[in-house]
Image (cartoon, rainbow, N blue to C red; front, side):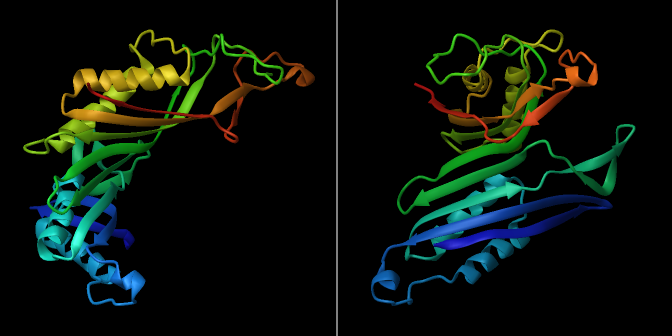
Amino acid sequence: YGKNTIKFLRLRHEGKKHFVKEVEVCTHLRLTSAQEYLDGNNSLVIPTDTMKNIVLVLAKKNGISTLEQFAIDICRYFMTTFCQVAYVKTYVQEVPWQRLQENGVPHIHSFMLVPDGIRFCEAEQCRNGPLVLFAGIKDLKLMKTTQSGFEGFYRSEYTTLPERHDRILCGELFCKWSYGECKDLDFDCIWNKVRECILEAFSGPLDCGEYSPSYQRTVNCIQMHIFSKVSQVQIIEIVLNNTFYNVLDMNNLGLTNEKEVLIPVETPYGSCACTLGRK
């Protein structure tokens, strides 16, 4: 049981300069006894309102240096404070505020919401067990307008999809990875590096791109590129939900449409997923 969607903004000051972290936290516990379920005995139950207050107090006292460290702080607090807690899991995601700039000069207290992917993390721990940490990015919408196709697939009597050697590849990406040892890690640097790897592997070289024969192959290329560049990552889960774009037939309007006007088909959508780990 637990408390979901604990939302708050943590504001930090360094002189005139302001720093913001707006987050959403979900924290769940499993207790050593199930007596509240079996007997209606609530004597060991930590109220979810108390859980919410603990999260807010930790944000006030410790601040949020990184999402990962904040999730670790929450897990450790419940494990070290309440002997009846057998397992704790905490999820934290960040609202993507970006500091405004003018001619490369950052503003001291103004920010803009940027839809370039949502950062999140999860920390979980069993009593007497190691803390396990995951990080990730979700709702990252990516598109490339060529260098993608889908050919040679299995055909049956119900297959109507034509083969395409040049199509738009567009999708919403979810990527979650696990760490090994969590000591002395620069979580911000690693997260930014993973995001950079995702963009590089998806798009290819700036001047020519790289051909993708399928969404599945793109997912695997992203995973392998992350493994080659970020040694701290041990397991990567990726889900890529695709959006098709159909070329609009404009013959009835007396026009030839050479892949210039396209209509998005958001539902139903295809989805591919893969979880890959190091040997």
